[in-house]
Image (cartoon, rainbow, N blue to C red; front, side, top):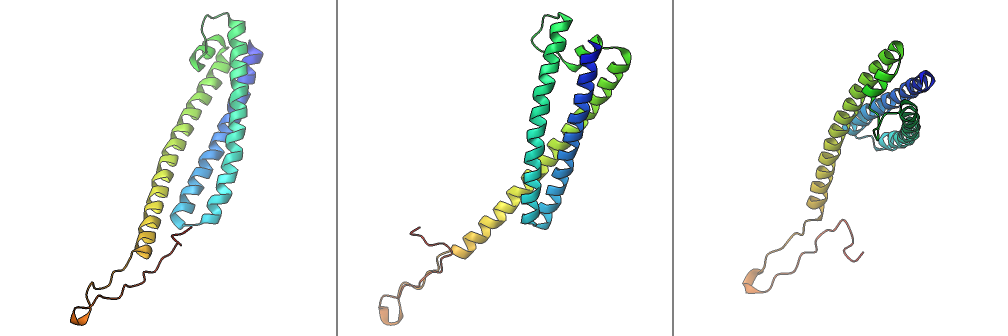
Amino acid sequence: MEELCNKLTVLLTDMLQVYTNILALGRRKKDALVAGKVNDLEVITKEEEQLILQAGKLEKAREGITQDILAKSGLQTDKLTLTEIKELAGSDIAEQLSHLGDELRVTLQEIKATNELNTKLIQRAMAYVDYNINILTQHSTGPVYAAQGQAGKSVQSRMLVDQKA
């Protein structure tokens, strides 16, 4: 059991490192959004994708270790929580698991807050782009009647995008 708990501790440490890196990228993304650096956003997004894949692999490994601990413990439950695992582990490992669990919770909450802020920044940028496109593509209308009651010439409106496309 102690060996499995040690493996879990190492794995949670790796997960914490990956999530810390994701948080750092989220903060860089915020800076790039504020500065309007599209190229930086592309690079950051690719780095994020790699880290998210890595986090997924670590999560699968964590589930496997948790299932092994569950099988060895003989508990009658579908899934073990970190609190239950701490009770099964020795005091040193339990303390490490507690610390890692707290750090992971804080880091994940910060990631959530950063992602929400980035989402708002992206929505504002999109609204600004939509507003500018609408201004550029507005149809200008000429007068309906010209001098002496004749029909006025229609004014060709400037279009940003070909409407036939």
